[in-house]
Amino acid sequence: TLTKEFIKGMPKAELHLHLEGTLEPDLKLVLAEKNQIDIGQTTIAEIEKSYQFDSLPSFLNIYYPAMNVLQVEEDFYQLAMAYLTKVKAHNVRYAELFFDPQAHTSRGISFETVINGYYRAVTDSHTLGIETALIMCFLRDMSAESAAETFEQALPHRDKILGIGLDSDEHGNPPGKFKAVFKRAKEAGFHITMHCDIDQENSIGNIREALLDIQVERLDHGTNIVEDRELVEYVKEQGIGLTCCPVSNGFVVDDMKGKEILDLLREGVKVTVNSDDPAYFQSYISDDIFALSENYDMTPADVVLLAENSFAISWLPEAKKSSYL
Ligand code: ADE
Ligand code: ZN
Image (cartoon, rainbow, N blue to C red; front, side, top):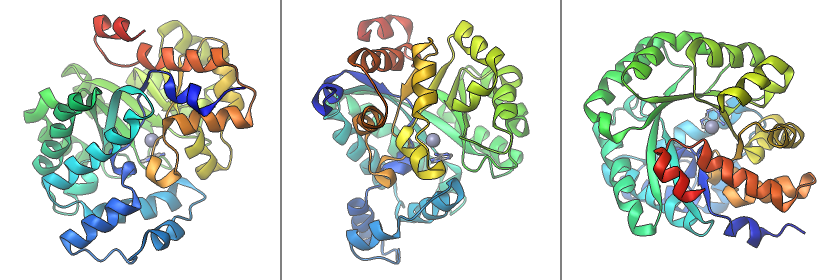
């Protein structure tokens, strides 16, 4: 009885969305042509056919090279505006947007090009009736020194960045590797979060480290927390939210983790559903919620709770938050 229209119509916040993961094949082709970049494919069908991934590394191996089509400030702006225009139809009212500066600075694009393009979209998002903010992520498969350098590059742009996150390949790259830079980020007043991906080698150990040592304010994914009752109680007490991405999970671990998501939601953990990399997983936020409802029993009350949680665990100022709730 849950319709896509009902899910789409629900006012919501999106909190786990990689801007680079919103690069649709059509824009990829347009930018490749404009910037004279050979991406190996010349049609949308060819690009879509190349999207064969069954694990996080196999996804990342397609994801990073594609970013080469992003060259100038306007490209980053256009990418973000295209995403925001799409999710207006999903009644996204507020979005906290991840971006990966090192994926661009490592190929010779300046930090300023990236931040200025994305931030112009943050400013202009108001014209679409959407409020937005940026979360800068470090690539955890790069060094702690590179993360520290990136943090330094971000400091002159302090006012443009709301939070700091951690993404890319978790294997062999636990939260503790970045303890120093996250401590600095926290002291500088940034909100902090980290990816704790699904079914990693030491998922629960990494979740414990992120929560207790780094003291993150949210977990991105993080459903392996079900393995430790004490940690589940801890996030409930602290109001720490999980930003889950069922369709993405379906691609990278062949399991949406819907049971875990719904069990945690219904026992009072502040769980949300998000799209992660919608252009690659062909699923925008309402599609993710709908996919969950098609594969697991879900009620309208579950959808309402997901939407409420999305504002509740956002990093909006409290007064603004309550205007949405
Ligand atoms: N970067 C983009 N999507 C990601 C994901 N699902 N996990 C880790 N890093 C990512
Ligand atoms: Zn993610």
